[in-house]
Image (cartoon, rainbow, N blue to C red; front, side, top):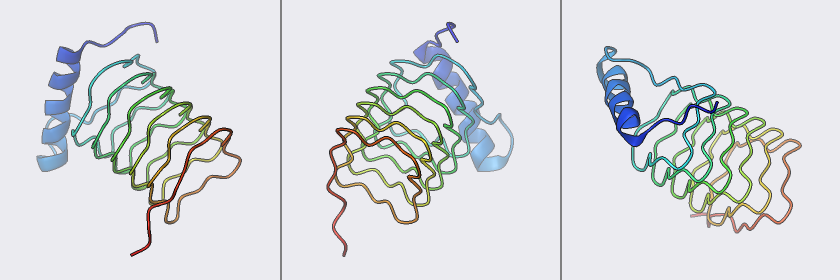
Length: 147
């Protein structure tokens, strides 16, 4: 996992993923066990991407669409996931210590055994989300208001 991806390579891969999502050609984003720390994914559509065990420490994912993404066992320490769409995301065993998830939509996400120590969960939507055995020490949260 020591091979750190550069922003230019990520953007090229994201273009291929966008084609795959839209038309079935292109290539699904599959960055299993890659070091993506500090990269900017903001406002991209990463739906159905495979990022299992990827290292995304200090990464910027603000406003990113992460529908049905595999982030199981990924490390997202101090990552900015604010206002992300994590519908049906697999975050089992993910390390989200210190992550900013403010205003994220975690509907039907699986955070079983996830580490959310000191994470900011203010305004999150958790309808149907699973937090079984998740570590929540020092977590800051105020759930989104019901309409």
